[in-house]
Length: 286
Image 1 (cartoon, one colour):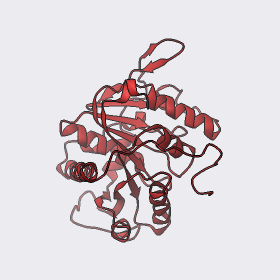
Image 2 (spheres, rainbow, N blue to C red; image 1 turned 180 degrees about the vertical axis):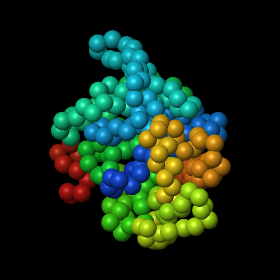
Image 3 (cartoon, rainbow, N blue to C red; image 1 turned 120 degrees about the horizontal axis):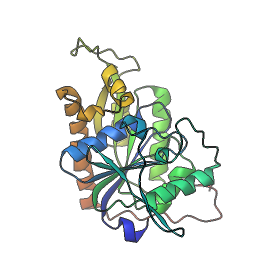
Image 4 (cartoon, rainbow, N blue to C red; image 1 turned 90 degrees about the vertical axis):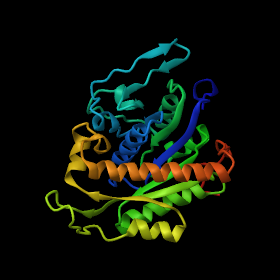
């Protein structure tokens, strides 16, 4: 990361998943909002270059962030909402525009958003990573000194298989980014009018059991509630709506993340950006 711009970021947290469709961006947004609600200074970077969704989830489809600097080095001025500083490729492209870029180009754009955004002083920078274990993820750990990763999964085995791959990626000797916790999304379905009822549509406790098997903290379980999905579509994060259940869910996850981050920082030395063999194609090929 650019030392000039980013030496005041306390903790960089990557929210990742092995596959798409598990609600990773929804979780990223609500974690960030919940952290900011506790009085912390928080930034949120949308690293899903091909499918940026954070502008929609925060009602910022028409936002036009400022750009400072000169032709040699442009500085992106983050958009601010809900107490967050925000950066996303979605602010710089037309709605519905397809980005037909090869992996290295997408990784380069991500690095620019990370390095050239004027984040200022932050307690937490939450990075909503794209699903998978590809170019963006490698660029991320090579560019930034990541404090830790959070893995989002659903209870389904097909999701858990890919979640374990994401965990394995961060634990590889070449990377060694601590996995701070697992968040199980869509844990059960609760009808809006019957909040005490639970229907385990995607299986029961898959994420919880994976956390126990891998000796990783379970940061929280999020029920499948229609209003949580609709809140994202309407640009109003659930962690910010006037509903005690939603606030409690995400406030609890934020508290657990803060606790695990503090434990990590007390027992481990700061993570260094990854130095990889330039002749190697990736971390899994050696």
